[in-house]
Length: 303
Image (cartoon, rainbow, N blue to C red):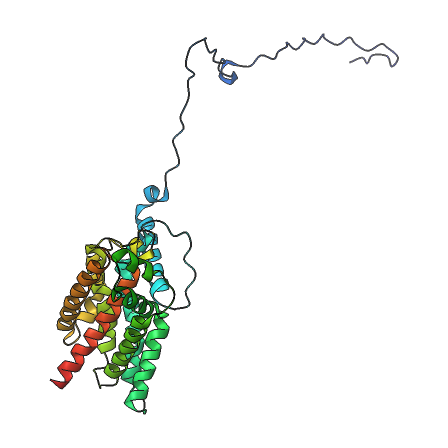
């Protein structure tokens, strides 16, 4: 094969085909034609499906999360346990949490019962005083404060509207002071009376169960209060949680005594406040139920 001479001119290249403009694309890559909106015609709007809520996508997991939140809220509200702060409290959370009130009773009454069970080598009065201190410490004096405020309002010779104003007053009056001292003396005397060690456990659990009856039976005296948000709790679930304590000796009878006393006291308080109850009244009813249960065990012990 012969080679072209070195100095020979380059061979002419084939002419390139000019690129069309605008570029042409295959049919499958072409964009759809733009919509031309005629005068007076409504635009076509494509509505994309909204993202489903967690309750719709994972109903069982969302339900468990709500129940754990309700338990957390009940323990954080009724006890002074060092629990994390409950975040993002939604409407209905306090009502859902009220079903777990008996579990808070196990915490409070269980520790006081454990103190009696230990049989400390101390005089009964000292052990009873320690029990009262633990009781008040674990509840943050929440119910005791409601008892004192309620006594000031309910025993005042005022109108129902004025009594509701007294409930909001932070100052303690003569009725509240006398009622608070009497309640502490009763609690101290009963804990030092040689009761069965489990009596405080039954008292704390039963009190937080039976209080749900007036909470659901009577309207809220003040709609903006936490007591109003805690209404409409699930009585059946609270009863299930309280059932282990009710299986202890004579606990059923003690619960009936507490329920009767709470029912009568709630009816009287509702009449004094114009037909409704408040969170302070719920605290009064819890303290009353606790004293009634302990009093029943003391009566049964001496009878």
